Image (cartoon, rainbow, N blue to C red):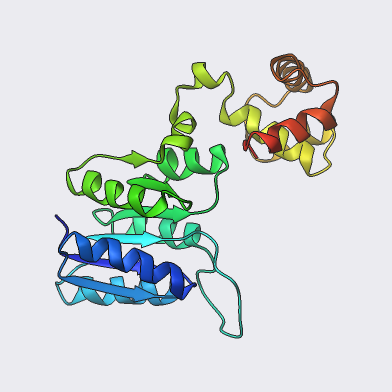
Length: 221
């Protein structure tokens, strides 16, 4: 089991719940912060003092206030920490339930667990901590489909990027230009049109606007 854990959430009531779960697992050293910058600095100092944290539990959304922050979201904090402290295990504990967000955090940034805040949130958080301590990953049951193979989802990151750009008001020609500018391949207009037609059929969307609406409803963007 972990020996040293830090929890980062800007709501004190949430921190209390997280603390109670960690305490039940007989973890000796538990620290809590309400700012991402404070989490980073504590983790950094602990590493320099050769008493590193084993686990970070963090929310994704933090309300901005009078205090300027280098890291304004849990995702920014995670990206920085995974680069600097790759051995630090991280559990996301968030109300955010968009499937693509879960996929990105698990598959791209390699967090160890993603727990959805809800009625069973604290129970699932306990399960996540236990699993992570054993070297396993964990995702709340209602979000597990986010980790299905692309063949199961029938949609990949390229498709999602097209939908995102559509939602930002870009035309197919604009998307083609954007892909060429960012060296995203394939970038041809004909390929983008083919992918859009495939997506419309797959999601039974009448047009691009309808497709974006459906993608938002199912949590892809």
